[in-house]
Image (cartoon, rainbow, N blue to C red; front, side, top):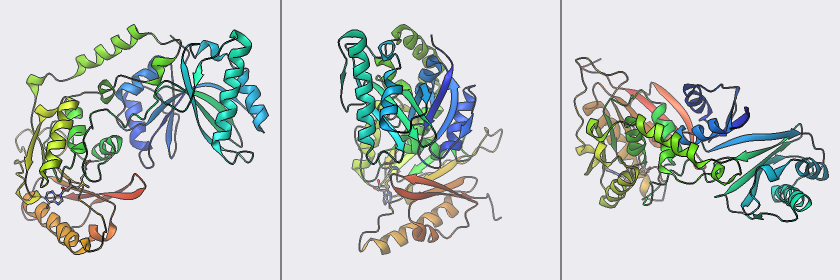
Length: 391
Ligand SMILES: C[S@@+](CC[C@H](N)C(=O)[O-])C[C@H]1O[C@@H](n2cnc3c(N)ncnc32)[C@H](O)[C@@H]1O
């Protein structure tokens, strides 16, 4: 279908090593792990698979051409020489996005415009007509990477970020990005056959991502539009077959375990979480309940022939520091610590929070701390090993 080329998969900070494991598990090579991406190699078919399967990625960029450019006119020239008429349909639409760190560019929009002009002029020279272009990223997307040392153009095969799975129509306060929730779960001791308890579930992102893993549903199956569908070589029959194969991988509804528990004291949050779970096709896997987190029932951990991994209790409590909230939140974090200690024997406990001071109020010794970025907020996942008995 196409050549093996460099593929760059982008992600949020602190997630690239988890993303690299996902890529390796798909049988693709990991060439480098960087702060905001992982470099691999593959064909356009591999790019499609990456879009379908990856849980922690944002975008899949398929390299078309590398070149050196010392100034914008050289950029224009190199882009104009590429046969875009083989990639973008004449009656199609494309946008240009970029990562630029070059002394001649103070505004990336200028570099994007240069690339757009170079592509449009190429079409006019070759075909006498041109495709439409604009800012929307839901059709063909060309991505420019340009730093002092190197320049490259890619097809962004994804378009709107993979993090937007499409199931989250309703949210309440401070929802977690879907790809971040998946990365958090993949950083824990949990394995899909084990119970997972998520008090303070909000709009349900952690519980839903866990259920998708348990059902072996690739998140990309929930979406029906990708940028690769808007390039010339796209063959819908291949895509349909790929989706079909992956659907066969899913656990059937009959095998549902229903050992994911999601609770929240806000009825609107639970209603939103239920609705989102239904849209994601996993509502049959999650037990929802409106209650204070302290009333959440914790199933006894399996002691005879336990599945691999560990059962977990995972919290993403509020951490806002609005005036007057401090005292309530201090008490809340203290209660979370007590709850984990008293109810969580045999589990691993996790608290994901952006507030270091409040985290201290949990009052348990963390066995591990992992950094993340939640939107713009530096956050941490704290792990607590909750022993059975009196250790
Ligand atoms: C930061 S939000 C969780 C967001 C969630 N991870 C998501 O992706 O939507 C915190 C949640 O804690 C809930 N909450 C606060 N205090 C609670 C309590 N005492 N018992 C149960 N839930 C509580 C709030 O209603 C809110 O939905």
